[in-house]
Image (cartoon, rainbow, N blue to C red; front, side):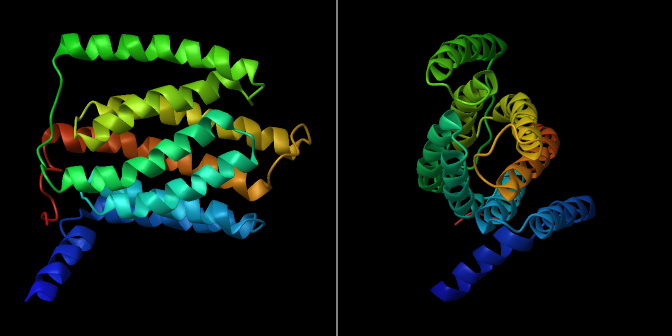
Length: 240
């Protein structure tokens, strides 16, 4: 009986209540990650990060606990890529992401209600995020990190966004949108630098897969902000 319940929970988490539009865009995003790997198969770690990243973000958009299982693989792969490409703030962020996955799994199993801040609290939070970004930018520049203005943004804001995500505050998506824009630009610049020979660190597949993944994350964050605001993500797929 227990095995039947677990199977039922897993099936609901993975397959239930998906709209046709969602199935279509998930398929496209996954196919794009595999295409990137076919173009630049020089590192499988990039493909792992991309595929599991798409699965993590999609199930996160649906408000499903299973996203943290996929997220653990993605964040470990992302951390390795950040280390190998000397993106130091992204490396620190990757460690934080990895540690947050089991915490998120535990938290989402306790309470599935989606919360929201007051306007005043939201303003204070966003103002603090900007100040913290400027401070970390200065530190990263002193360490000679690549593109410190983007790298610092990819550290500070995601920490706040990930905490809000784990606690199921819908404002997390408002923070992820500018983060994903910055991260997409960041990895695209590094990709161009690699292609033009101005950057010889890492491998083509690493930069290409991360740029593609950030584009997917941006699209998903925009869509997820609507899903969470409308309450469609509450308890979808069931809880354990």
